[in-house]
Image (cartoon, rainbow, N blue to C red; front, side):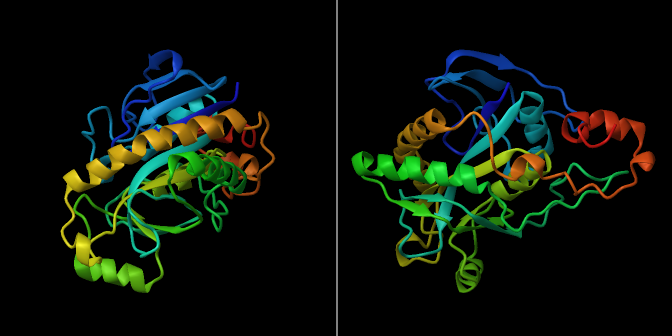
Length: 290
């Protein structure tokens, strides 16, 4: 059964409104996910919710087990994931409390974050020029834009998210460098999710909640977590309303290319793929590798 995944970021470690909710622990070949998955009904659709930093926000961006989180979503039958994430703005016209539906990413992480299911005996090269699902992102933006009229919020269609390492915020020099590159917003978590979701043939889209102007802006030279959370809490109820609206409108069947992302991507000779890898990745590669 097709389900819709929601990954909650800073400030969203619980998702109220899910009916008949139950918590499920998932074992994965990649270790433990960020916590229990919450499965239930939202706006007549089955959803799976997971807080990426764990309940109570105890997992640092560099320490999130992204592979386990996305694998768990796949195992639970999720075909679409909407990520809700806090971010800083690198553009004057993207103001705190605005929302951005991201369409591109740039990687500036330097820790050993695991961003692929395909290593240690199997290689696959997915297409990632357009890293989010266009179909899902358009529906997400349309839902947000419609809601913006009553919520008095501003939606931005498209924007490049630069994924920094963290957990510290940017230096002034870094912030100015990213602005000179034409980046739009900055965050610490979404690129690994987008890559792994594509490998798992799951549609992925980001609803980014702008909390601050990063440190480049004269009014935001010192960024504090109190400032970030205060603004995020003001946005979180709006984010939930946008999520409810888009979930209600999602069609049952997908027509995008995300569902076939691995069709020509696996390059390893099938006879050489180790049996354990075939078993571990069966829910991802099973329709291509027997």
